[in-house]
Length: 296
Image (tube, rainbow, N blue to C red; front, side, top):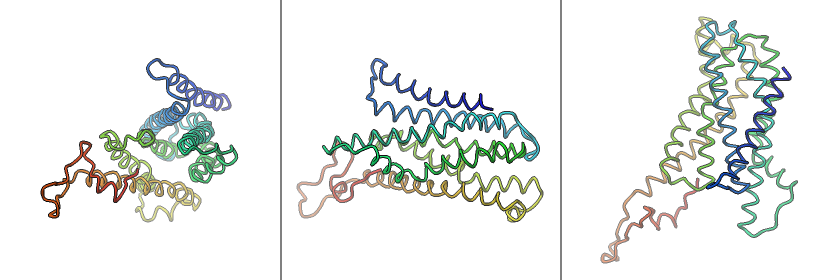
């Protein structure tokens, strides 16, 4: 057990440091420290997501009896991934720290002390930090010890929630480098919307449906048939997913509604028929931009 945890403790921070070093020193790239940190953190998150999703698919497809069947990869990957959540709290802070430094430099203000930045980070990322802490302090012991080897299928399905993470990470990178106008950002946004909804929001109703089919009971009877702490755990895990999905929907609405506004041809006015407003080369209407700035 300890050797697997140690392996994860080395792998995720090591991959982060290796990626950062390569981005800073590779000829033709030579990114700044801040840029290398931000992209490396997203890369590690995407790698972890791919590994978790692959493990989840293997586990779920191997369990015919969704309650009793076991797969060695279930507990093994949980032990391996636990250090990731501890590392990621640090990685998210480093990303936030460099963003604050860039903002202070652009505003020509004095650098904020570390204690102030930490407090600001914890306020801004409170829900995500709380999610990671709960994963380590609650979900880890429950998944490894309390289950007693039962329900590996459900654990595997929950690993598949990470399928949405690569598109989330790519979206953050594109926003960070002001690429919201690109086709890649729009395609990735649509993919993120679909994968997040399917893999993180519909995930929990599907788990209830799967158990109802296994126990030959209607879906509406499942919450009354499982222990209360299972319902409580599912509700607490699903709540932040629904909140984050609502934020993604708001962002997607701004993205696509803004794009549709910018594609409208400008209208000429009768007061100046000889000087119609010509569309600029970048496709953005100056009147619309002045009236309602678009930010994503």
